[in-house]
Image (cartoon, rainbow, N blue to C red; front, top):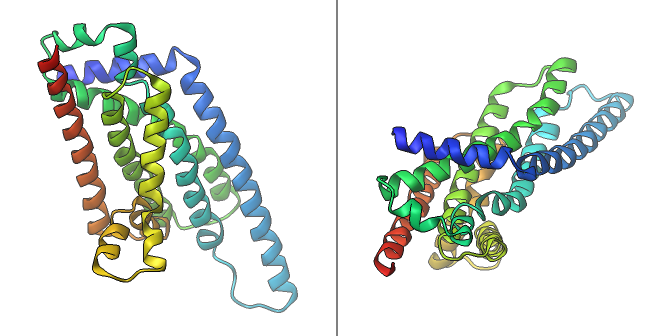
Length: 255
């Protein structure tokens, strides 16, 4: 475990000693801030309209603000995750340090897990910027924190799943742009797999739709934590990291 933490710490320092971390956090913060402003403005406008019409049932801030915001955050993450994962192994290959890393007294799974944890920390820092906006809601309102916690758990699990896939893809090339583009393509495909359920109800279509990361995130965005969704994400994380370890083993044989 010590080696895993050392590698993770190295990755984290690499992110924060370059403009990557600050650029990603600035991009996410700017976009999420705009989403926050739009969602709250719409919420206030609709609330005033309902009061003028004599509506007795107040609007739920979690349903009209938090849920859509977390859904939009997952979409933004879809674009930022390839930027986080693309350099993990591709940069090592480009700089010629991959051989040094593989000949060090560290097991493959420790390297893989350490790099993935470093990327996860970067991702959590990025989405953590949004907590500043959410804090405003608590300062001026009384939203239920349980759906918010469930939504952020979903964001973390979904991010871990896609980062594991991106980590594997990064081992297959020395070009960061190719790694990032391929990761985005695969993540986007996993995102839209559930579209097949809108025009096909056969058994194979249900299986394909079930593999969509969006299908398993929607319950989290509504404040529902279902064990099958948690198991799906954990399974995808394990699969991505397992394939990464096998890819590293292949590199050892070829070298």
